[in-house]
Length: 263
Length: 268
Image 1 (tube, one colour):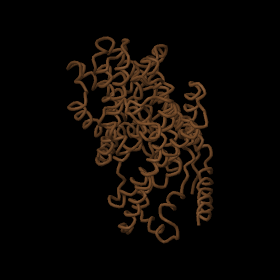
Image 2: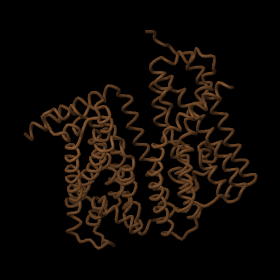
Image 3: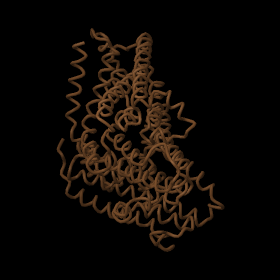
Image 4: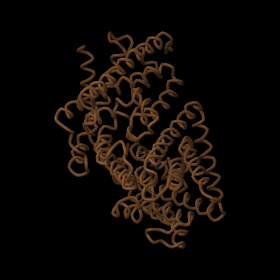
Protein backbone atom coordinates (compact mmCIF):
# COMPACT_ATOMS: atom_id res chain seq x y z
CA UNK A 1 0.00 0.00 0.00
CA UNK A 2 2.82 2.36 0.92
CA UNK A 3 4.51 1.78 -2.43
CA UNK A 4 1.37 2.66 -4.38
CA UNK A 5 0.87 5.76 -2.28
CA UNK A 6 4.45 6.80 -3.07
CA UNK A 7 3.80 6.37 -6.81
CA UNK A 8 0.59 8.36 -6.52
CA UNK A 9 2.18 11.24 -4.62
CA UNK A 10 5.42 11.48 -6.59
CA UNK A 11 3.69 11.44 -9.97
CA UNK A 12 1.11 13.92 -8.72
CA UNK A 13 3.84 16.27 -7.53
CA UNK A 14 5.90 15.95 -10.69
CA UNK A 15 2.87 16.72 -12.85
CA UNK A 16 2.15 19.79 -10.73
CA UNK A 17 5.34 21.24 -12.21
CA UNK A 18 3.60 21.87 -15.51
CA UNK A 19 1.88 24.97 -14.24
CA UNK A 20 2.64 27.20 -17.23
CA UNK A 21 1.11 24.68 -19.64
CA UNK A 22 -1.94 24.40 -17.40
CA UNK A 23 -2.35 28.17 -17.30
CA UNK A 24 -2.20 28.40 -21.09
CA UNK A 25 -4.82 25.65 -21.24
CA UNK A 26 -7.03 27.63 -18.88
CA UNK A 27 -7.00 30.63 -21.22
CA UNK A 28 -8.07 28.49 -24.16
CA UNK A 29 -10.79 26.76 -22.19
CA UNK A 30 -12.23 30.03 -20.92
CA UNK A 31 -12.43 31.16 -24.53
CA UNK A 32 -14.18 27.96 -25.64
CA UNK A 33 -16.57 28.23 -22.73
CA UNK A 34 -17.44 31.76 -23.71
CA UNK A 35 -18.23 30.73 -27.30
CA UNK A 36 -20.35 27.81 -26.05
CA UNK A 37 -22.29 30.06 -23.67
CA UNK A 38 -23.11 32.46 -26.49
CA UNK A 39 -24.21 29.61 -28.79
CA UNK A 40 -26.58 28.14 -26.18
CA UNK A 41 -27.82 31.61 -25.34
CA UNK A 42 -28.64 31.99 -29.03
CA UNK A 43 -30.56 28.69 -29.07
CA UNK A 44 -32.54 29.50 -25.94
CA UNK A 45 -33.53 32.95 -27.22
CA UNK A 46 -34.81 31.30 -30.41
CA UNK A 47 -37.36 28.97 -28.83
CA UNK A 48 -40.08 29.35 -26.27
CA UNK A 49 -40.92 25.67 -25.86
CA UNK A 50 -39.96 24.24 -22.45
CA UNK A 51 -36.61 22.45 -22.30
CA UNK A 52 -35.20 19.83 -19.89
CA UNK A 53 -32.72 22.44 -18.60
CA UNK A 54 -32.98 26.18 -18.08
CA UNK A 55 -30.47 28.44 -19.79
CA UNK A 56 -28.85 29.29 -16.43
CA UNK A 57 -28.39 25.59 -15.75
CA UNK A 58 -26.79 25.10 -19.16
CA UNK A 59 -24.38 27.98 -18.52
CA UNK A 60 -23.37 26.46 -15.19
CA UNK A 61 -23.04 23.04 -16.86
CA UNK A 62 -20.76 24.51 -19.55
CA UNK A 63 -18.43 26.16 -17.02
CA UNK A 64 -18.29 23.06 -14.87
CA UNK A 65 -17.52 21.16 -18.06
CA UNK A 66 -14.65 23.50 -18.94
CA UNK A 67 -13.29 23.19 -15.39
CA UNK A 68 -13.53 19.39 -15.30
CA UNK A 69 -12.79 18.76 -18.99
CA UNK A 70 -10.00 16.31 -18.21
CA UNK A 71 -12.48 13.87 -16.68
CA UNK A 72 -13.92 13.28 -20.13
CA UNK A 73 -10.84 13.53 -22.30
CA UNK A 74 -9.06 10.25 -22.71
CA UNK A 75 -5.61 9.31 -23.77
CA UNK A 76 -3.58 6.30 -22.79
CA UNK A 77 -0.57 6.60 -20.51
CA UNK A 78 2.16 7.38 -23.05
CA UNK A 79 4.95 6.08 -20.80
CA UNK A 80 3.26 2.72 -20.40
CA UNK A 81 2.52 2.52 -24.12
CA UNK A 82 6.20 3.12 -24.89
CA UNK A 83 7.14 0.52 -22.27
CA UNK A 84 4.97 -2.11 -23.92
CA UNK A 85 6.29 -1.30 -27.38
CA UNK A 86 9.95 -1.38 -26.34
CA UNK A 87 9.64 -4.47 -24.15
CA UNK A 88 10.68 -2.60 -21.01
CA UNK A 89 7.40 -3.74 -19.52
CA UNK A 90 9.33 -6.88 -18.57
CA UNK A 91 11.16 -4.88 -15.90
CA UNK A 92 7.86 -3.63 -14.54
CA UNK A 93 6.72 -7.22 -14.13
CA UNK A 94 9.75 -8.23 -12.09
CA UNK A 95 8.93 -5.65 -9.42
CA UNK A 96 7.17 -6.91 -6.29
CA UNK A 97 4.11 -4.82 -7.12
CA UNK A 98 0.78 -5.60 -8.64
CA UNK A 99 0.98 -4.32 -12.23
CA UNK A 100 -2.67 -3.34 -12.51
CA UNK A 101 -2.60 -1.35 -9.28
CA UNK A 102 0.53 0.47 -10.42
CA UNK A 103 -1.08 1.45 -13.71
CA UNK A 104 -4.34 2.39 -12.06
CA UNK A 105 -2.45 4.58 -9.60
CA UNK A 106 -0.55 6.22 -12.43
CA UNK A 107 -3.80 6.86 -14.29
CA UNK A 108 -5.36 8.35 -11.15
CA UNK A 109 -2.55 10.79 -10.43
CA UNK A 110 -2.14 11.52 -14.13
CA UNK A 111 -5.73 12.79 -14.22
CA UNK A 112 -5.87 14.39 -10.80
CA UNK A 113 -2.91 16.79 -10.97
CA UNK A 114 -3.74 18.57 -14.24
CA UNK A 115 -7.42 18.51 -13.35
CA UNK A 116 -6.78 20.32 -10.09
CA UNK A 117 -4.50 22.92 -11.70
CA UNK A 118 -6.96 23.73 -14.44
CA UNK A 119 -10.23 23.54 -12.58
CA UNK A 120 -9.49 25.95 -9.75
CA UNK A 121 -8.74 29.02 -11.90
CA UNK A 122 -11.71 28.25 -14.15
CA UNK A 123 -14.01 27.91 -11.15
CA UNK A 124 -12.82 31.25 -9.82
CA UNK A 125 -12.98 33.24 -13.06
CA UNK A 126 -16.25 31.81 -14.33
CA UNK A 127 -17.81 32.03 -10.87
CA UNK A 128 -16.91 35.69 -10.49
CA UNK A 129 -17.51 36.99 -14.00
CA UNK A 130 -19.04 34.48 -16.40
CA UNK A 131 -22.24 33.13 -14.90
CA UNK A 132 -21.24 29.96 -13.06
CA UNK A 133 -23.76 29.59 -10.23
CA UNK A 134 -22.83 28.41 -6.74
CA UNK A 135 -23.86 24.86 -5.76
CA UNK A 136 -27.57 24.53 -4.97
CA UNK A 137 -26.86 23.98 -1.27
CA UNK A 138 -24.04 23.12 1.09
CA UNK A 139 -24.91 19.44 0.98
CA UNK A 140 -25.11 19.59 -2.83
CA UNK A 141 -21.62 21.07 -2.86
CA UNK A 142 -20.26 18.34 -0.59
CA UNK A 143 -21.96 15.59 -2.57
CA UNK A 144 -20.56 17.16 -5.74
CA UNK A 145 -17.03 16.74 -4.38
CA UNK A 146 -17.68 13.10 -3.50
CA UNK A 147 -19.31 12.40 -6.85
CA UNK A 148 -16.48 14.14 -8.73
CA UNK A 149 -14.04 11.90 -6.92
CA UNK A 150 -16.08 8.89 -8.01
CA UNK A 151 -15.94 10.36 -11.54
CA UNK A 152 -12.17 10.55 -11.20
CA UNK A 153 -12.01 6.90 -10.15
CA UNK A 154 -14.23 6.01 -13.10
CA UNK A 155 -11.94 7.93 -15.47
CA UNK A 156 -8.85 6.22 -14.00
CA UNK A 157 -10.41 2.77 -14.33
CA UNK A 158 -11.26 3.53 -17.96
CA UNK A 159 -7.72 4.74 -18.68
CA UNK A 160 -6.31 1.62 -17.01
CA UNK A 161 -8.61 -0.52 -19.16
CA UNK A 162 -7.50 1.29 -22.31
CA UNK A 163 -3.89 0.86 -21.25
CA UNK A 164 -4.04 -2.89 -20.70
CA UNK A 165 -5.60 -3.24 -24.17
CA UNK A 166 -2.25 -2.05 -25.53
CA UNK A 167 -0.84 -5.54 -24.94
CA UNK A 168 -2.54 -6.27 -28.24
CA UNK A 169 -0.52 -3.51 -29.91
CA UNK A 170 -2.46 -2.77 -33.05
CA UNK A 171 -6.01 -3.63 -32.03
CA UNK A 172 -5.32 -1.95 -28.70
CA UNK A 173 -4.46 1.28 -30.44
CA UNK A 174 -7.52 0.94 -32.64
CA UNK A 175 -9.84 0.44 -29.67
CA UNK A 176 -8.38 3.49 -27.97
CA UNK A 177 -8.67 5.72 -31.01
CA UNK A 178 -12.32 4.83 -31.45
CA UNK A 179 -13.27 4.69 -27.78
CA UNK A 180 -11.88 8.10 -26.83
CA UNK A 181 -14.16 10.21 -29.05
CA UNK A 182 -17.16 8.00 -28.27
CA UNK A 183 -16.66 8.38 -24.50
CA UNK A 184 -16.08 12.12 -24.93
CA UNK A 185 -19.42 12.49 -26.67
CA UNK A 186 -21.40 10.17 -24.37
CA UNK A 187 -20.01 11.82 -21.22
CA UNK A 188 -22.08 14.93 -21.94
CA UNK A 189 -19.19 17.34 -22.39
CA UNK A 190 -20.07 18.19 -26.00
CA UNK A 191 -23.81 18.55 -25.42
CA UNK A 192 -25.28 18.27 -21.90
CA UNK A 193 -26.83 14.81 -21.65
CA UNK A 194 -30.33 16.07 -20.70
CA UNK A 195 -30.46 17.84 -24.09
CA UNK A 196 -29.83 14.60 -26.00
CA UNK A 197 -32.89 13.22 -27.83
CA UNK A 198 -35.50 11.77 -25.48
CA UNK A 199 -35.27 8.29 -27.01
CA UNK A 200 -31.61 8.10 -25.99
CA UNK A 201 -32.16 9.00 -22.35
CA UNK A 202 -32.86 5.50 -21.04
CA UNK A 203 -29.73 4.22 -22.78
CA UNK A 204 -27.62 7.07 -21.40
CA UNK A 205 -28.91 6.32 -17.91
CA UNK A 206 -27.50 2.78 -18.05
CA UNK A 207 -24.20 3.53 -19.78
CA UNK A 208 -21.25 4.28 -17.48
CA UNK A 209 -20.22 7.52 -19.17
CA UNK A 210 -22.71 9.83 -17.47
CA UNK A 211 -20.81 9.09 -14.27
CA UNK A 212 -17.77 11.01 -15.50
CA UNK A 213 -19.17 14.54 -15.40
CA UNK A 214 -22.92 14.56 -15.88
CA UNK A 215 -23.71 12.99 -12.49
CA UNK A 216 -21.53 15.34 -10.43
CA UNK A 217 -22.82 18.35 -12.37
CA UNK A 218 -26.48 17.48 -11.80
CA UNK A 219 -25.80 16.99 -8.11
CA UNK A 220 -24.07 20.40 -8.03
CA UNK A 221 -27.10 22.08 -9.58
CA UNK A 222 -29.46 20.42 -7.12
CA UNK A 223 -31.29 18.43 -9.80
CA UNK A 224 -30.22 15.11 -8.25
CA UNK A 225 -30.89 15.08 -4.50
CA UNK A 226 -31.58 12.53 -1.79
CA UNK A 227 -32.25 9.00 -3.01
CA UNK A 228 -31.72 9.97 -6.66
CA UNK A 229 -28.26 11.32 -5.86
CA UNK A 230 -27.48 8.18 -3.86
CA UNK A 231 -28.57 5.99 -6.76
CA UNK A 232 -26.41 7.99 -9.16
CA UNK A 233 -23.42 7.56 -6.86
CA UNK A 234 -24.04 3.80 -6.72
CA UNK A 235 -24.18 3.78 -10.52
CA UNK A 236 -20.74 5.40 -10.63
CA UNK A 237 -19.21 3.01 -8.09
CA UNK A 238 -20.73 -0.06 -9.73
CA UNK A 239 -19.13 0.82 -13.05
CA UNK A 240 -15.77 1.53 -11.40
CA UNK A 241 -15.84 -2.01 -9.99
CA UNK A 242 -16.84 -3.48 -13.35
CA UNK A 243 -14.03 -1.69 -15.17
CA UNK A 244 -11.43 -2.65 -12.57
CA UNK A 245 -12.42 -6.33 -12.76
CA UNK A 246 -12.47 -6.19 -16.55
CA UNK A 247 -9.08 -4.48 -16.65
CA UNK A 248 -7.55 -7.08 -14.33
CA UNK A 249 -8.96 -9.94 -16.40
CA UNK A 250 -7.61 -8.52 -19.65
CA UNK A 251 -4.24 -7.84 -18.04
CA UNK A 252 -3.92 -11.49 -16.96
CA UNK A 253 -4.65 -12.65 -20.49
CA UNK A 254 -2.31 -10.04 -21.96
CA UNK A 255 0.57 -11.08 -19.73
CA UNK A 256 0.01 -14.73 -20.64
CA UNK A 257 0.40 -14.12 -24.35
CA UNK A 258 3.18 -11.56 -23.97
CA UNK A 259 6.49 -12.38 -25.58
CA UNK A 260 9.34 -9.99 -24.89
CA UNK A 261 12.17 -10.17 -27.39
CA UNK A 262 15.57 -10.13 -25.79
CA UNK A 263 18.46 -8.00 -26.91
CA UNK B 1 11.63 28.73 -61.13
CA UNK B 2 7.99 28.13 -60.29
CA UNK B 3 7.95 24.78 -62.05
CA UNK B 4 11.13 23.79 -60.36
CA UNK B 5 9.61 24.67 -56.97
CA UNK B 6 6.49 22.70 -57.77
CA UNK B 7 8.54 19.65 -58.70
CA UNK B 8 10.54 20.01 -55.55
CA UNK B 9 7.33 20.30 -53.52
CA UNK B 10 6.08 17.13 -55.15
CA UNK B 11 9.11 15.13 -54.20
CA UNK B 12 9.07 16.50 -50.65
CA UNK B 13 5.42 15.47 -50.31
CA UNK B 14 6.06 12.05 -51.83
CA UNK B 15 8.63 11.36 -49.12
CA UNK B 16 6.29 12.57 -46.40
CA UNK B 17 3.46 10.36 -47.67
CA UNK B 18 5.62 7.32 -47.96
CA UNK B 19 6.73 7.66 -44.35
CA UNK B 20 3.12 8.07 -43.17
CA UNK B 21 2.07 4.99 -45.08
CA UNK B 22 4.62 2.82 -43.30
CA UNK B 23 2.12 2.39 -40.48
CA UNK B 24 -0.97 1.99 -42.59
CA UNK B 25 -3.29 0.50 -39.98
CA UNK B 26 -2.30 3.13 -37.46
CA UNK B 27 -2.91 5.83 -40.06
CA UNK B 28 -6.39 4.54 -40.90
CA UNK B 29 -7.38 4.40 -37.24
CA UNK B 30 -6.18 7.93 -36.59
CA UNK B 31 -8.14 9.21 -39.57
CA UNK B 32 -11.27 7.43 -38.36
CA UNK B 33 -10.68 8.87 -34.91
CA UNK B 34 -10.62 12.40 -36.37
CA UNK B 35 -13.78 11.64 -38.32
CA UNK B 36 -15.51 10.54 -35.12
CA UNK B 37 -14.45 13.55 -33.04
CA UNK B 38 -15.89 16.11 -35.41
CA UNK B 39 -18.71 13.85 -36.56
CA UNK B 40 -20.13 13.36 -33.06
CA UNK B 41 -19.83 17.07 -32.41
CA UNK B 42 -21.95 17.78 -35.44
CA UNK B 43 -24.50 15.16 -34.35
CA UNK B 44 -24.69 17.12 -31.11
CA UNK B 45 -25.66 20.24 -33.06
CA UNK B 46 -28.25 18.23 -34.96
CA UNK B 47 -29.75 17.24 -31.59
CA UNK B 48 -29.83 20.88 -30.51
CA UNK B 49 -31.57 21.95 -33.72
CA UNK B 50 -34.11 19.16 -33.19
CA UNK B 51 -34.86 20.61 -29.75
CA UNK B 52 -34.80 24.32 -30.52
CA UNK B 53 -35.78 24.35 -34.20
CA UNK B 54 -33.46 27.21 -35.17
CA UNK B 55 -30.88 29.61 -33.82
CA UNK B 56 -31.64 33.30 -34.32
CA UNK B 57 -33.53 32.48 -37.50
CA UNK B 58 -30.86 30.17 -38.94
CA UNK B 59 -31.82 26.60 -39.82
CA UNK B 60 -29.74 23.44 -39.58
CA UNK B 61 -28.95 23.20 -43.34
CA UNK B 62 -27.83 26.82 -43.32
CA UNK B 63 -25.66 26.27 -40.28
CA UNK B 64 -24.31 23.13 -41.97
CA UNK B 65 -22.96 25.31 -44.79
CA UNK B 66 -21.21 27.68 -42.38
CA UNK B 67 -19.85 24.68 -40.50
CA UNK B 68 -18.60 22.75 -43.50
CA UNK B 69 -16.83 25.66 -45.19
CA UNK B 70 -14.88 26.53 -42.07
CA UNK B 71 -14.17 22.89 -41.27
CA UNK B 72 -12.99 22.06 -44.81
CA UNK B 73 -10.70 25.07 -44.71
CA UNK B 74 -9.26 24.14 -41.36
CA UNK B 75 -8.74 20.47 -42.22
CA UNK B 76 -6.91 21.46 -45.41
CA UNK B 77 -4.73 23.96 -43.57
CA UNK B 78 -3.89 21.44 -40.87
CA UNK B 79 -2.84 18.93 -43.52
CA UNK B 80 -0.81 21.33 -45.65
CA UNK B 81 0.69 23.62 -42.99
CA UNK B 82 1.70 20.93 -40.53
CA UNK B 83 5.32 22.11 -40.73
CA UNK B 84 4.42 25.47 -39.20
CA UNK B 85 2.43 23.71 -36.50
CA UNK B 86 5.48 21.78 -35.27
CA UNK B 87 7.83 24.70 -35.87
CA UNK B 88 8.54 25.40 -32.14
CA UNK B 89 10.34 22.04 -31.91
CA UNK B 90 12.51 23.04 -34.82
CA UNK B 91 13.53 26.27 -33.09
CA UNK B 92 14.20 24.52 -29.80
CA UNK B 93 16.37 21.81 -31.36
CA UNK B 94 18.19 24.28 -33.58
CA UNK B 95 17.18 22.37 -36.73
CA UNK B 96 15.97 25.59 -38.28
CA UNK B 97 19.59 26.69 -38.87
CA UNK B 98 19.93 24.11 -41.62
CA UNK B 99 16.96 25.56 -43.49
CA UNK B 100 18.73 28.89 -43.70
CA UNK B 101 21.57 27.35 -45.68
CA UNK B 102 19.45 25.92 -48.48
CA UNK B 103 18.73 27.79 -51.71
CA UNK B 104 14.96 28.03 -51.20
CA UNK B 105 12.87 30.32 -49.01
CA UNK B 106 12.37 29.13 -45.44
CA UNK B 107 8.60 29.39 -45.71
CA UNK B 108 8.63 27.12 -48.75
CA UNK B 109 10.78 24.48 -47.07
CA UNK B 110 8.65 24.35 -43.95
CA UNK B 111 5.49 24.21 -46.02
CA UNK B 112 6.84 21.36 -48.12
CA UNK B 113 8.30 19.18 -45.40
CA UNK B 114 5.07 17.57 -44.28
CA UNK B 115 1.62 16.84 -45.66
CA UNK B 116 -0.48 15.35 -42.94
CA UNK B 117 -2.81 12.92 -44.63
CA UNK B 118 -4.83 11.82 -41.62
CA UNK B 119 -6.70 15.16 -41.63
CA UNK B 120 -8.74 13.41 -44.31
CA UNK B 121 -10.90 12.34 -41.35
CA UNK B 122 -12.14 15.82 -40.58
CA UNK B 123 -12.15 16.78 -44.26
CA UNK B 124 -14.41 13.94 -45.36
CA UNK B 125 -16.76 14.51 -42.45
CA UNK B 126 -17.12 18.19 -43.38
CA UNK B 127 -17.57 17.27 -47.04
CA UNK B 128 -20.50 15.02 -46.14
CA UNK B 129 -22.09 17.86 -44.17
CA UNK B 130 -21.56 20.23 -47.10
CA UNK B 131 -23.28 17.94 -49.60
CA UNK B 132 -26.06 17.04 -47.19
CA UNK B 133 -26.75 20.70 -46.40
CA UNK B 134 -26.62 21.73 -50.05
CA UNK B 135 -29.09 18.99 -50.94
CA UNK B 136 -31.67 20.61 -48.63
CA UNK B 137 -31.87 23.65 -50.93
CA UNK B 138 -33.41 23.78 -54.41
CA UNK B 139 -30.81 23.82 -57.18
CA UNK B 140 -27.97 24.84 -54.92
CA UNK B 141 -25.05 23.95 -57.19
CA UNK B 142 -25.27 26.66 -59.82
CA UNK B 143 -21.92 27.55 -61.45
CA UNK B 144 -21.80 30.84 -59.52
CA UNK B 145 -22.37 29.06 -56.21
CA UNK B 146 -19.73 26.44 -57.00
CA UNK B 147 -17.16 29.16 -57.64
CA UNK B 148 -18.15 31.08 -54.55
CA UNK B 149 -18.05 28.05 -52.24
CA UNK B 150 -14.66 27.12 -53.63
CA UNK B 151 -13.40 30.69 -53.18
CA UNK B 152 -14.69 30.76 -49.63
CA UNK B 153 -12.86 27.53 -48.75
CA UNK B 154 -9.67 28.72 -50.47
CA UNK B 155 -9.91 32.03 -48.60
CA UNK B 156 -10.35 30.09 -45.37
CA UNK B 157 -7.27 27.98 -46.07
CA UNK B 158 -5.24 31.16 -46.61
CA UNK B 159 -6.62 32.71 -43.46
CA UNK B 160 -5.90 29.75 -41.20
CA UNK B 161 -2.58 29.39 -43.00
CA UNK B 162 -1.79 32.96 -42.02
CA UNK B 163 -2.63 32.18 -38.39
CA UNK B 164 -0.34 29.13 -38.44
CA UNK B 165 2.48 31.24 -39.91
CA UNK B 166 1.87 33.91 -37.29
CA UNK B 167 1.95 31.39 -34.46
CA UNK B 168 5.24 30.01 -35.80
CA UNK B 169 6.62 33.52 -36.26
CA UNK B 170 6.03 34.36 -32.61
CA UNK B 171 8.44 31.53 -31.76
CA UNK B 172 11.32 33.62 -33.06
CA UNK B 173 10.75 35.84 -30.05
CA UNK B 174 9.43 33.40 -27.44
CA UNK B 175 11.06 30.06 -28.42
CA UNK B 176 7.99 28.46 -26.84
CA UNK B 177 4.79 27.89 -28.75
CA UNK B 178 2.09 30.26 -27.58
CA UNK B 179 -1.01 28.27 -26.82
CA UNK B 180 -3.12 31.39 -26.67
CA UNK B 181 -3.07 31.55 -30.49
CA UNK B 182 -5.15 28.36 -30.36
CA UNK B 183 -8.06 30.61 -29.39
CA UNK B 184 -7.83 32.06 -32.90
CA UNK B 185 -7.32 28.76 -34.74
CA UNK B 186 -9.27 26.04 -32.92
CA UNK B 187 -11.40 28.69 -31.24
CA UNK B 188 -11.96 30.33 -34.60
CA UNK B 189 -13.29 27.07 -36.05
CA UNK B 190 -15.58 26.67 -33.06
CA UNK B 191 -16.83 30.24 -33.42
CA UNK B 192 -17.24 30.44 -37.18
CA UNK B 193 -19.21 27.22 -37.50
CA UNK B 194 -22.19 29.39 -36.62
CA UNK B 195 -23.10 32.66 -38.38
CA UNK B 196 -21.30 35.51 -36.58
CA UNK B 197 -24.54 37.37 -36.00
CA UNK B 198 -25.48 35.03 -33.14
CA UNK B 199 -22.59 36.41 -31.05
CA UNK B 200 -22.27 39.58 -29.02
CA UNK B 201 -21.26 42.62 -31.12
CA UNK B 202 -17.76 43.02 -29.59
CA UNK B 203 -17.04 39.34 -30.16
CA UNK B 204 -18.40 39.49 -33.69
CA UNK B 205 -16.16 42.49 -34.41
CA UNK B 206 -13.04 40.51 -33.46
CA UNK B 207 -13.89 37.74 -35.92
CA UNK B 208 -14.80 40.17 -38.68
CA UNK B 209 -12.01 42.74 -38.50
CA UNK B 210 -9.10 41.39 -36.44
CA UNK B 211 -9.19 37.72 -37.45
CA UNK B 212 -11.46 38.05 -40.48
CA UNK B 213 -13.10 34.62 -40.33
CA UNK B 214 -16.51 36.09 -41.14
CA UNK B 215 -15.17 37.09 -44.55
CA UNK B 216 -14.67 33.48 -45.62
CA UNK B 217 -18.06 32.11 -44.70
CA UNK B 218 -20.52 34.65 -43.35
CA UNK B 219 -20.42 37.15 -46.24
CA UNK B 220 -19.94 34.73 -49.19
CA UNK B 221 -22.75 32.50 -47.96
CA UNK B 222 -25.15 35.43 -48.12
CA UNK B 223 -24.47 35.65 -51.83
CA UNK B 224 -24.75 31.87 -52.18
CA UNK B 225 -28.08 31.69 -50.38
CA UNK B 226 -29.30 34.97 -51.82
CA UNK B 227 -30.06 36.38 -48.38
CA UNK B 228 -30.22 39.94 -47.17
CA UNK B 229 -27.39 40.54 -44.73
CA UNK B 230 -28.34 41.91 -41.32
CA UNK B 231 -24.92 43.54 -41.20
CA UNK B 232 -25.65 45.34 -44.48
CA UNK B 233 -23.05 43.91 -46.89
CA UNK B 234 -23.60 44.29 -50.62
CA UNK B 235 -23.29 41.43 -53.18
CA UNK B 236 -20.04 42.93 -54.50
CA UNK B 237 -18.52 42.85 -51.03
CA UNK B 238 -19.80 39.31 -50.50
CA UNK B 239 -18.02 38.16 -53.67
CA UNK B 240 -14.78 39.94 -52.81
CA UNK B 241 -14.64 39.10 -49.12
CA UNK B 242 -12.79 35.72 -49.42
CA UNK B 243 -9.85 37.76 -50.71
CA UNK B 244 -9.43 39.08 -47.18
CA UNK B 245 -7.99 35.65 -46.33
CA UNK B 246 -5.36 36.02 -49.05
CA UNK B 247 -4.44 39.50 -47.84
CA UNK B 248 -4.19 38.18 -44.29
CA UNK B 249 -1.82 35.43 -45.41
CA UNK B 250 0.40 37.90 -47.27
CA UNK B 251 0.63 40.15 -44.21
CA UNK B 252 1.52 37.15 -42.02
CA UNK B 253 4.23 36.03 -44.45
CA UNK B 254 5.75 39.53 -44.22
CA UNK B 255 5.82 39.15 -40.43
CA UNK B 256 7.53 35.79 -40.93
CA UNK B 257 10.30 37.44 -42.98
CA UNK B 258 10.86 39.99 -40.24
CA UNK B 259 11.05 37.13 -37.76
CA UNK B 260 13.57 35.17 -39.82
CA UNK B 261 15.75 38.28 -40.08
CA UNK B 262 15.96 38.69 -36.31
CA UNK B 263 16.38 34.98 -35.64
CA UNK B 264 19.40 33.95 -33.64
CA UNK B 265 19.88 30.26 -33.04
CA UNK B 266 19.28 28.65 -29.66
CA UNK B 267 22.65 27.04 -30.24
CA UNK B 268 21.60 23.58 -29.18
